[in-house]
Image (tube, rainbow, N blue to C red; front, side, top):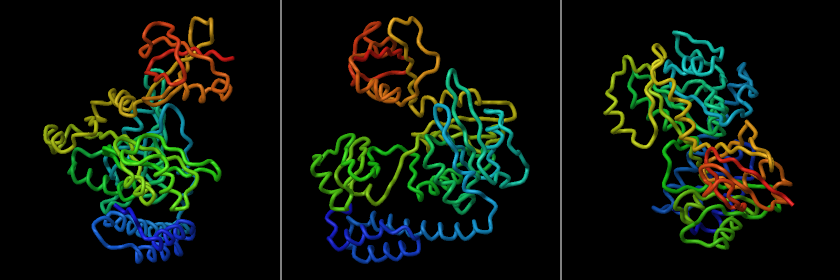
Length: 385
């Protein structure tokens, strides 16, 4: 782990991250690497910075290509709609377009020739009283690169979840490894780690906020570490069991986990047994589909809902019998506080108490405070001063 970096190395890192020009930033990162001590504890850091340099070089190449390309950046700037934005990724001829058309009735081109998808395609998948925005991303190629380059990867990174579509008529495990490695190079994880840290920098003056627990450090330890890297305003989100080393790694890595689902399409002619797949891929939900006979199609909405741990909360006015039909959407673990803030700042500032009906209530109409954790299907009535 890159703890106790010398002051010279820290200074060079701070200088590097302040440079926006990719050419100059590569030079600064190379200078930073020259000052990092070479030992087992810094192997991961050195590897990651080398990946950053490689990514910057690919971005430079991508910019040069885009000068002659008709692909518009705005095509990849897709505003989120519905309960969640989920991207469909996969290699060419995996059947992503066919799935998108069946699930959402989107008007997409379905072709017999490879690499037909040149830009993102969007559709809405209804599930019970919510809907999911599905975005088909141009395919990943054999070398592990993706059509659309950095823009496509940014779209995946900003999404709420991933549907990885694999062609059952081809080598499933090879496809899986190529896609997985392509995402990992962009700092996107599909396997949920035991613990990881995300650092979100905020506007100057906002201070340091730590959400979650760091096993071997206090808040002051974390604040001191961030300040040593000239980070004075940030939210540090800790998931699972993490240490102060994980916090420092996050300064360099910027890794993010995306809840993922694997769809093995064209299952009619699959070349591998389901039992063999389950032995290799054990921690990601798998759906087996066929666009010809609609096998597995009906289970996709429910699987997205469960995998993304979506919570629907219904609100009602005091003295009213029925709640509003449209629910507020959150994730597992949201509280009355989160709900109040999402409705209006006044509900939080003038909050007195809430009454709840549903799965999280001990009894109908239970009186609770801001820290009460909500569950899917709860009905909430907020009382203010």
